[in-house]
Structures are given as structure tokens and as C-alpha cells.
Length: 275
Image (tube, rainbow, N blue to C red; front, side, top):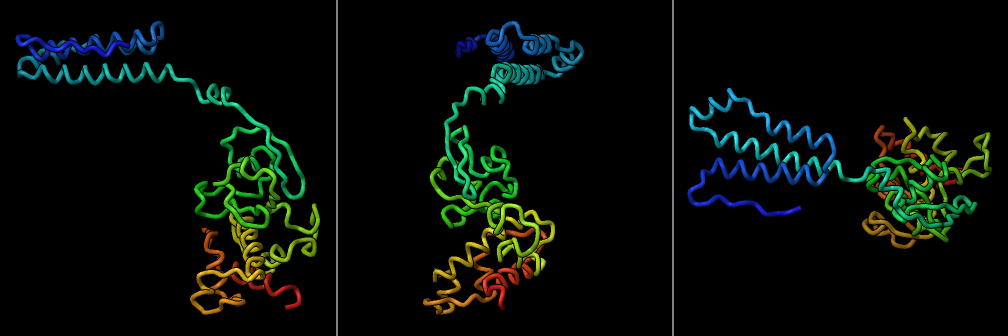
């Protein structure tokens, strides 16, 4: 499409120059998508100027208002022509190349054909139907999508599925002692503690909370320190105080405000069933 715009000659009125610019824009817009009804309709609207309004503006010396308005209309027609020429989302997805990836989730390997940009969260939920992992903020801020990768907790919404290939991935579905738990004894110690201590309300954030708590207890058993550990001076074997639990669980948000019971559940799970 030509980008040439005729400039007004020294003796040419500004209104006439604007009319010429409008005509160029309108013609180029329709030429770019010739034969399509939306552009023709817009061009017809440009040509249909109310004569009464035109006479009133002319009487008050405001013809430039018509030119300004018609310029905006022509610009809109040009933008619409480009919009109608863009491929739909479905067409764009069809042209995306997929690749094969094998993910080992809860001990079971599964090969998927994915867009390389697919997040681990979407791979789990949409392709493997493991919907226990929740999509909350999708920005790595709420922790609802937390999973374990080789024992370390990560936000699956910020992790590419291809980056997790070859790793051991554990979701909430893989924490229980059996594949089909029927009683509280079949659950992991953290899952059981959340039930006993009523560490949930709506339950949406609970899978991420349980996964994160499982990793936090393991990190503490390994002697890994938090900022609270440094501030308290417990650099060797930090004690699992409520403040320590809150710090280690701070990446997981509960919109229901069940934090006191969550802290109690983590504390109970860390002490073990004999406590």
C-alpha cells in the first residue's frame, strides 16, 4: 500500500487538502481488502455526509470540523481493513508447530505433543487431566499451582513443560500412600493434618498449600534455613516455630484467611503422628 500523501499547494485550502487525504485513506483501505463488505460499508458511510450539518458548519466557518471527523472515520476504515485481514486465533494455533515431550508425573511417564510454549500447569490440567493443581493468578504470585520437581517446590504456571522433561514431577494426586485413598490413613501426613486441623475452607488453594507444606517440612529436616532462621540465630537446626512456618509458607495465599489452621496443620505434620 502506498504511503504517499498529497500535500496542499500554497494556494490550496486546508479543507480541500484534508478531503484529498481522506480520499487517499479510504481508497487504500478498500484496496487492501477489496471485495469485502465491511470495507465497502465504511466507505459508503464516509461518502454520506449530512448536508444540513455541512451547511451549518459552513455558515459558522467550521468546515475544518468536517475534515477532522472524516479523517478519523477514514483512519478507522483503514484499521478495520487490517483487522479483517488478520488470521483468527484458531488459524494461528493450527500453524503452530508441536513437539513431543515425555513427562514423568507421580511416577508415571506420559508422552505428549505440545506447543513448546505450553506451561507445566497447562500440560498437567489440559493434557493430562490432573486438575488437582489449580490455576489461580497464573503469574506465580498465589502458589495455587505449586508442584514438586525433583522434590523442590515450583510454580508450575511459570515453568515450561519442556523444562521439566526428565524430572520427577509430583502433584497433589501423587502424595497419598495409595493411588485411590479411601481413609485418612491412606493419605500423606500433611494431607491428614490438613483434614484434622481444618486447614482449608473453599479448598481452592489447598492442593498448593499441601504441596508447599510437604516441601517446607523436608527443607527443614535437611537443615535449610529461612530468613527467620537467620534472624533468630538458629543456624544449625532451626526450630519449627509458627513464625518459621509462616515464613516458609509465605508464597502460598489463602483468600479465605485460613492461615491459623494451616500453620497448625503444618506444625502437626512436622511433629509426626506420635505427637
